[in-house]
Length: 466
Image 1 (cartoon, rainbow, N blue to C red):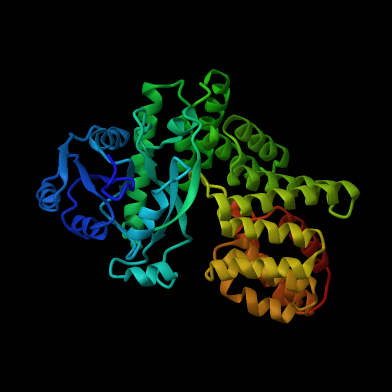
Image 2 (cartoon, rainbow, N blue to C red):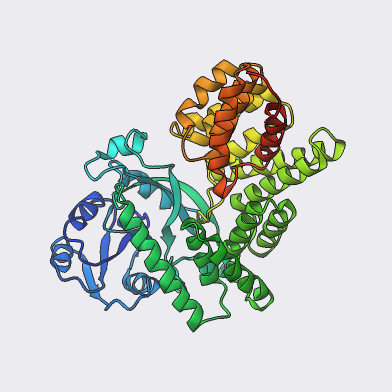
């Protein structure tokens, strides 16, 4: 049933447990923006249910049984709106967003709206500061939170519940929408993030035991393990899923497994493997910025092997640039269906800057790294890239100034500092910086070409001189 003015009705659907501290702010943020509140409580021992009822919510109770999709689906079945806005208790609809939300759903041609999520750096940060970026933790993420309510609407996945199969099954359309959420859930609590990751890994392993032929939890598990730095455990998970690909129904999302396989290939400096993973993933589930990004990184490695000055190397770098430009276009215009783990606007700009540097288009590469720094001012990788280009442009002193804030745990910054020092004739400093790069090589360089730069520096600095 539509609203009196003929516009679609909106339902807020929320799953909560022991959220009496955060829930009031969440519900207040959607006042006037939605037509009904549906809250599923999964076993609160505090006043969560009472707070929700006092706000006018329909409160449903479902005991927690290690399944995140089930309470989402319960809420959706009881919603009556034409559209569902999905929030968690630690999220807020940005101030002034309600009217825009109404405009977005009126006559919408999409089924799944990707909203902009801004992670607050601390619990006390004002929404305006978080939205401006001044108090934001990390980049803005696009998440599937505005959903057309249909009879067959269903989240799947006991962990990382998602709408991938529903969207593929109905051949639905996704779209980035101008709706902003502020998330207060992490607020620099690294211990909480680690606990959630460990919990997810355990739950995903159980999912695989229950349904060993469904590749969806394999993909999530592999990405969780990669995030936790456990690549050796992620590899057999990915290979087990890859072997099951022929048995998957057409509506099943294979993207996460493909992305994890591509990331693992890049860590082995296997360009062909990354390109193949992107090809298979795209063939199964359609275009996605993560596939473009993996393809670009793989082609960069293949170009290095062919020789960037060769005709084949130049061709491969051209294809890599096209792939990364495509990733940026998708990220900026379409938005990803879900953030899988490979691409973000900042990462795409970094990769594009490297490709342009390798192609010898140094001023253009410097501008690209500048874009990345403007987007993420704290990005050490962007500073390293810019400094690397400055070294090639003959501005070694400026390069040292730019890279200085990036001299930390990553080997890349120390390597570029060594290159700059060597260009300035400070060979002892260059040797010191290079030694620091070697000490930090546990996870390798961010980009494969820096291994070649290290080899050249090693040879140059092997002889006498100061």
